Length: 195
Image 1 (cartoon, helix red, strand yellow):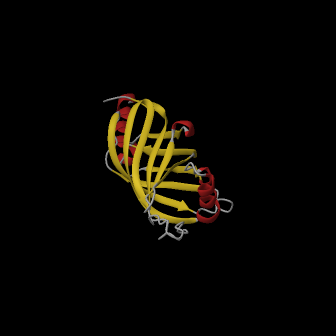
Image 2 (image 1 turned 90 degrees about the vertical axis):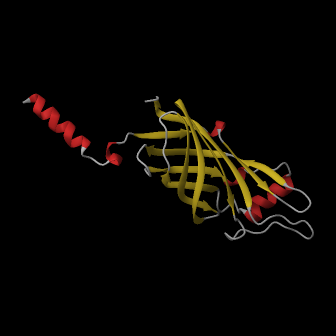
Image 3 (image 1 turned 180 degrees about the vertical axis):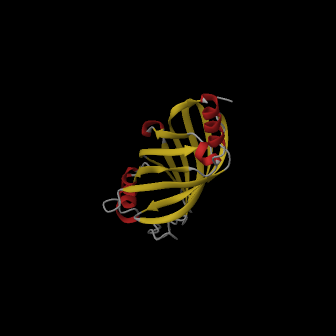
């Protein structure tokens, strides 16, 4: 009777859809090991800088599409090496006193996550900048080694189209889009091993 009950339980678990059987894990982002670099081209010079990742936690499973969580970036942490330019970015472009956070909420992903090693996926979610939300899909390269995970990706933000002020002045013109390089590093809730 015990063997019959065990067989019945096993059969019922195998009949569940893959998303229900998939193991969910949590990727806890380490702000000190993560960074966001930005690049803004101009007609006389280019602007490069970094933003600080404040915190983040992403829950996902090996079932395609199963992902959730939040990544928070300090809007006022942007530094380009020029105090006057950074002050203008904080106060006039990003308005960080009113909108201190830039966030990304992953909602789904496409592609296959390997148990260990490298994977390439497309993560879709809601990107919120200066209080306005936008649908965004990020191409991400994922590297998993034991309990460590690193996610990297590059994308472009059309900040002027999204309603932010164009910082161009007189003959100093800059692009109306900004290029972003994202690196998120942290740990998984449990180590993954090759199967």
